[in-house]
Length: 304
Image (cartoon, rainbow, N blue to C red):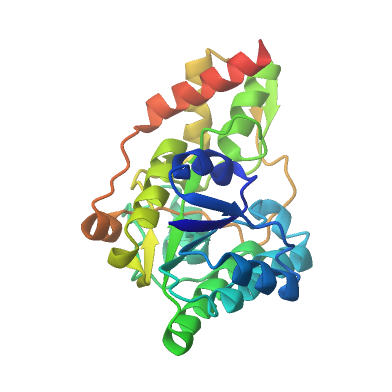
């Protein structure tokens, strides 16, 4: 197959590209916000599959760089969708969405009041999205544009509502790697943001498996499927940090709430894999403890 990928230099893109070596893989070089350039490049390639990973993904930064996030994540995706609609025999447009589209849900208020939720629920494709950050608003808008293009332009697509992925080797902005690198660098203390929210986490190889499964089976999922990507394993960030500290034998002090305030912080994000498992047979394999061990090894080796 001829595959066109955006976001090839990102976390998932750099790891996914080698897995697609048996195909004819092209990396988009045009600026996503340049409509004319994107259309010309896509038409010249005439891909069978478009893998759209390109985006700004730092949720926290989106609160302070709203315009940039909207331009790249939404307008850039609209440009790509419109270009894709003109491709002959396109088999699938695979879009990297996010579990962040669920945003505020009633359980968030329950956590704020009672600390521990009475019901550990997981979101799925039937949960009403309520995006609550510029990043997630743009991603949800992209989903709606894909649905429009599917109905009106016959565009085949699959959207993956990804959860927090870990196992990075060269970026410590995100929570897992940030906790690990701070604790490795300072035996006495580390500075983190909110400790009360619950999140679920997926190991990078499991995430790559789901992408490859979707890419390899367009006929099973290109009819406008939107999948949540689990696993269903919510953990409070404070507990997550303590788990990492224990693995590192780190006994310093965690200074919580040291990051900039995020308006409308979301206190519960958790998702399951029921639909995608039923449709494509994919299930995450890595347990969080072993995945953290491997991530710690990555950053210990970089430090040595």
